[in-house]
Image (cartoon, rainbow, N blue to C red; front, top):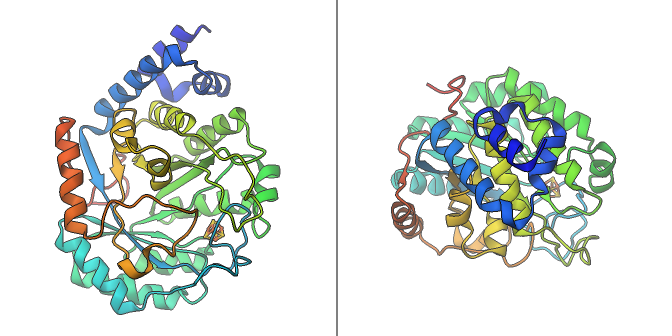
Length: 350
Ligand code: SF4
C-alpha cells in the first residue's frame, strides 16, 4: 500500500491498520508529516472533541523498590535524596487541585511499600469524602486483591506503562518484572472497572520502530482508555547514562499514530516531551493529544521526583499554571474540559 493509501485509510479506518501500516506511518519522511498531523488532528476532533483536560499530579514518594535501568528513582541510585509526602501534604495538594476546578487528581509514586493498600485506601476515601473528583493511581505493580480494595475505595483510573512491547528488551531494562505480568495487570485493571492507561518510552536502547508499532498494537488489543508516550531522557546516575535518548519528532509521530489507531483515548503531552521541546504542548495538542498534567506536588519536593534531570516546570502555583494553560488552549481555538473528563468509551465513570 502506498503512503497516500495508508494516510487515506488512517483518516476513516485507522483502527484497522495492520502492524506494517503502523510502522510505515511511524517511518514517514518529513514531506508527509503535515498530512499525518492533519489526519491525527481531524480524528482527535471527531472522536474526542476540542476539550483539553487537566489532571493535577501529586508525586507522593520517590522511594522505589525497583531498579529499572533508565530511571533516576531506581533503588540503586544512592545519590538521590528520597522523600515521602505525609497524608496531610497529599490531601492539601488535592484540596488545591479541586479548588482550582481541575476534575482529576493523579497520585503517583515509585514502587513504595510504605504506601500499602491500607494506607492508600485511607487516602482515597478521604479524597472522595472531600471532593467530587476522579482519582487516578500510578503506583506501579499491585496484585489483584490490592487493586480490588483500591477500586472499592473509589479509585477510578490506573496508569501502568508497559514501556516497551518487546519481552526481551523489556526484561533487559526491568530486572524486577516481566512484560507478561505487566500486561496481565493491565487486563485485571480493565476487569475491575478501572479506566486503564498504559504507555511507552520512545528511544529506549534496544528498541526499534517495529517495537513502537507493537506498542500501539498492544494498546489497541487491550482497549486502553489512556496512553502516555514520552522520549527516554538518559539520567546521569543510571546504567543508561551514556545512551543517546529518544527524540521529540518520533514522540510526535507516536502521538499522531496512537490517535489514529486508538481513536477515542486520552493522550497527554508528557513533561519529558516538554523538556525536549519548549513548544511541545501546542504541537502535541495539534497532532492528536488532548490532556496535560500540571504538577501540584509541594514545591520543596518537586525537583526530587527525578525520573530524569532538568524536568521542565511551568511555575510554582497551580492557579498560575492553570491560567497560563487556559490562555494557550484558547489561543488554539480549544477549551479546557470541565468535570472528571472520563473515558470517551463511557464504560467506567458516570
Ligand atoms: S520506572 Fe517506576 S518502577 Fe522503575 S525505577 Fe522508576 S519509579 Fe521505579
